[in-house]
Amino acid sequence: MDKHLNPQAEARLPETAQGCRERMATLQGEIASIRTQIATTDIRRQLEKKTLNPDWFHRAKTALRMKQQELAQVTARLAGLSEQPIVNRREVFKDALIDVVRAQCDDEQWSSLLTRARALSETQGAHHG
Image 1 (cartoon, helix red, strand yellow):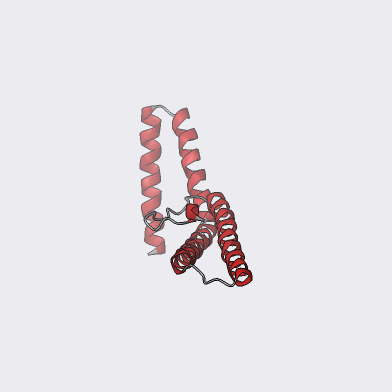
Image 2 (cartoon, rainbow, N blue to C red):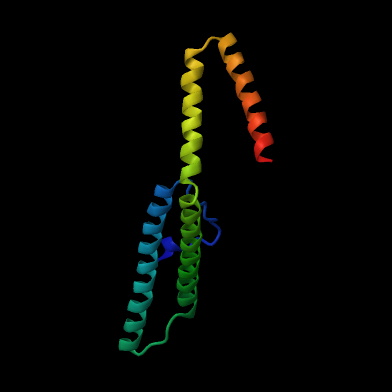
């Protein structure tokens, strides 16, 4: 169980939805493992009619809480990422389009296109404001 204890480590949230899903799966496995260890230790304690080691129990419960908190943060991060895919796809497409157009234009054509785009942007901004 000691591998689950690391109070100094601050959870870094994954940058992608896939990363969030992978981290959630890992955390769920770790949470299940800690719960199993707590239950197994308690059953063994009852069978042997001994007392539970309070230090070990405290560390186990702390590790469990930390994993659950991280799972909640990763779940929230995934929800936030799920709200953004249309914007992100649009931005990625715009960047790709700019790369394609830029590669096919010389400097003078590119400058002309930028000027036209700025003028159009200003015109559209006046209509929406």
